[in-house]
Structures are given as structure tokens and as C-alpha cells.
Length: 427
Image (cartoon, rainbow, N blue to C red; front, top):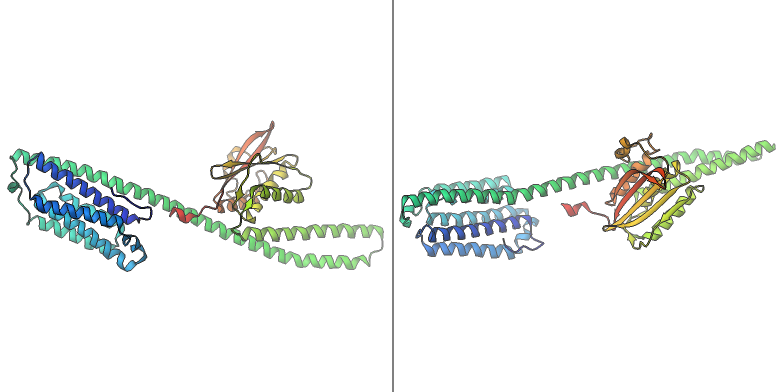
């Protein structure tokens, strides 16, 4: 079928396949005509046409010009139109010397039309179809009569026609299956990739809106909280009783908690929105994650199991936010037991977050992270954002109920590749 380089365009590969198929078919068929049916056609011009087929195949398999056609819309259709017409002409010459339109191989004129339908614009395809129809009509009037080929008998003629028609039909079906099925698979893959890309764009837009809303909320809440902090300082000189001072002290502590929570919200929103290409050592990432979790949940202990893992995790700070959300959910229902383990997985890592909080109803497992569900295991916006962030890095998030050291719990599994997966690679 011809040697193809990895850089060959899809159009070029189909063109080479078509040339290879026609060259092989004509060579086998003409050999059968000559030796089996003893048909004496003009060997010199027929051999010349086969040589032109082989020369065209060799040129197309080595030409860099065909790979550059995609870059120029002005020359793309005219050049491929000329190349397909050239195949039509070569086929017509061979048909001329082997009976014209009565030859069952006349249907091979359809093959360039199939390829033209795939790669040409509508206008150029109609020009190609008109050329094929004109050549077909010409072969009805101009051809070497079959009887002049010294066919042995009328029975041999019918055998030639019937067997040839059967062969052409089977080969056409085979070629169409070879061409159309891979094309269908490629179109399905492109459709899935475009759907995933569109979904990712919507998720990124949602993340942007959530982050913007969080930043705006922080800004709006900061003003009244700062005003309350200022009033609290002013009230300290006005309140003299011990009980009043105790109330003020409690109020000051609560204000500090609110201010810290707002600053944390601002920081985490910015981390979710801004990404970088820097990676982090997997053990360093886990250590930072453990420290941040300890600051957020001082009464809970996070068990981290790493085994002998070593390597780099290609992600940004937003990924840490996704894990913190998952750990927050686990600590809410299982403060006494939260375990994070990491193991190598294919070309990346598998993270497991386990708790002993009783699990989730089986009917709701598939819904986790697909929307903001508040009633099941405390999973709301946090887990929804976690899924979107993880999918941004080409990862997957899955949940399952399981027994963890004899107690019913929930396991959240995160699969992450070593490097972010780009959708463009599938297109």
C-alpha cells in the first residue's frame, strides 16, 4: 500500500492507498485476462499506463509538496482535483484497451469520486464527477472492441464479464470498508474530543465565574468586617466592666476568624483561576497538602501513605485546592480517620482518599461531583469544583463505598497523568 511517513496528511494517505489498490488490481486482472482467458490486448500501451501508475505512486509517497497543501487554501482543491482526474484518465486508457464500458472494471471510475467526496469542496467535486461521467460516456463510443481481443468463445466472454463483475463488486466493498470505517472512527474521535473540549471550556468558564464571585464577595464582606473591627477597638475605651470586656474579646476573636476565612477564600479562588506550567515533586506536594490540611483542621489527623513513590507531578496550585476540598469533606464526617495514599498508575499517579463516615447511598454514587448536591455526605460545591479542576489536568475522579479497617466509608480515587493532556492531540 505504499510507505507512509508519520507526517503524511490524511488526504495523501488516502490517495496513496487508492493508487496502490488500482495498480495492484489492474496488474492482477490484466495478468488473468492474458493467461487465463488468453485475451490479446495491446501490451505496450498497457504496460506504459501501469508504469505511469507506479511512477505517480512513487512521486506521491515522497513528495513534500502534498503535505504543504493544507497551508494554502488557494491550491488545495485544484491540485487534488488534478491528481484525481489523472487517476481517472489512467483508468480510462486501460479500459479503452480492454473493451471500454463493457469491461466490468468500468466501475473503478467511482473510486476517485469517493475520495473526491471526502477531500474536495462541493464545486470541485462536481467538476470531478462531470469529468468521470464524460470519460464514461466517451468509453461507450471509443474503445477497442472485445471481439478484437481474440476471445476464445462466447462462453469465455460471459465468464470474463460475470467473474469480473463479481470481483469488482467484492473489491469495491472491501475498499469502501477500508476507507469509510477508519474515517467514521476518526470522525467519532474528533466529535468526542470536541465535546470534551467544549465541556472543559464551560467548566473553565464556570471556574472563572465562581472565582470572580468569590473575589467580589471577599471585597464586599471586607468593608463591614473592617468597620466592625474598628468599632470593637473604639468600644474597648467605653466598656469598663469585666463581663463587657470578655464579650469584646470574644467578638474580636470571631472577627479574626472571619477575616482569616475571607483571606483564605480569596487565596483559594485565585489559585483555582491561575495556573502555571511548573511541576512539583510528588512528595513535596503531599507534604504541603498535609501541612495545609493540619492548619485547616487542627483536631483531625491526616494519614499519608506514599510507599516507595518518587517523581514529579505536573500540576499547579489549583490542584491542591481540589484535594483540600476532598479532604474537607472526609474530615467533616470522619474527623478521627482520614487516609491519603498514592501509588503509581500507568503514566501517572493514583490518589486514594478514604474515610469512615458511613459512605453514600449506592444510587447517588454516580452523581457525586456532577452537580451541587447538598444532601449526600455533605458534598456540594467543593466536590463539584474538585472534579472540574482534576479534569482540567486530564485526570479522573471516582467514588466508591468500601469497608475501611472494618468500618463503612467512602473512597475517593483521583487518577492523574504525569503531564496535562492536550485535547488538540486527538484532533
